[in-house]
Length: 549
Ligand code: GLN
Image 1 (cartoon, helix red, strand yellow):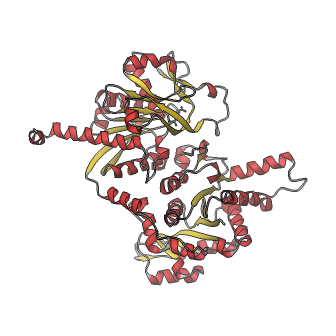
Image 2 (image 1 turned 120 degrees about the horizontal axis):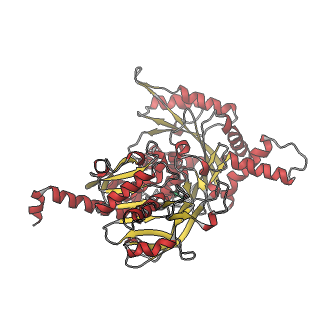
Image 3 (image 1 turned 90 degrees about the vertical axis):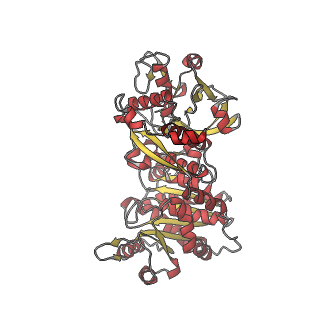
């Protein structure tokens, strides 16, 4: 029978509920249990697909094409499992379902209310994944902070579930902040007490309190939190700031979070945690033997969450290469022909990021040109790949006005054009080419070397595509389509034949990188950047040169 863990947050947002939930899940998984995580978000958007990255960070796309919260990325990266639409539910989706049912007449003349109709729909969805029989444990992260008006129906749904279930089938983990007051040189428990009190007013009581803190919690403090918040002292868990999110599972192991969860859920017969692979990864991550600088060219660089999966993919691939990857954020809006050398000249590789709309694209095109002409390793993702095609068309094929019809509908050379199936689409939400698609890779190409197989699948999120009318012209001039969709022939990967590493992909490889399975393009890109850096050092250091001879 499936057991349920609910993770709530108190005091402030951004405490890292997603990381705590994923870390707990990792520990339980490492003990041989089948675990999945889902996130319930209180906002009214049906999904985060229509949200600007500045609002809510990256939109994470699952295999089945759901546009979801970026925490699902953490779940997949930690657990090495796939999630799906069912793993992310918003208030908007709940209301949409209830309102549709009301329109169908399903409530038979009743007044439709938050309790019980909205809470019933929340509960139905909270139990859905568990009903598949696939999981021993389903962890549900409740977005937002206790006390928010919009989280109330979710808190009420958890309260009802806890009341309906046997005591050992469900528990609540509450993540709070223990702030440190510098002037008083003291950690303060009052905000935690208040947030637990707020929860209690809504009928919900935490079984475990995880305390986010900058300083270690001594026994006295733990006892105080336990007493005032009415939990056992062993159920007060310290979550001290870590250098890397990937250290958090080990910190939680030290604190015994998994053991207390297993005890409260009456789960016996589990094995000792198998975390060798995880520890091996951390070991490599902490002990690099080389260092490179990768430029991340994007327009949302002020907000690191906007490129979360890309940044994490670099962490996974850096560890396997035993290399420290320094990400240099370069705002594409401010790259010009005049400053490109100064901005990008010191880098060992360039990644041109995904994106939408006109802002910043000319800077991206200039960056691509710089990488192409200087043999600098280049990796373009989605819009980044489209910019690489436009740059090639303009500067190699001589089609000076080449563009994407996303930015210029009147261009005479639409080398990137709206996909046929997109031409009749008007609604914005959930209507892009989304989710996993196969791609056939040409032998004897960089892409084939990287993947080592002829058919791969990767996840997509776009409306525009490479315009196949121009393909022959591109290939004759040295930019080839090394990956295509086998059914409809859409170009999915482009590469330059006379460059050490120049690859553009229409899909989002960053969405499938995990700690245990780093994404192969990122791994190869870092390797190429390392070689580039080594060569650069050789040229700039004659001493090294003579040693090599
Ligand atoms: N705006 C481009 C398109 O829709 C690229 C999308 C992206 O980078 N995810 O095709």
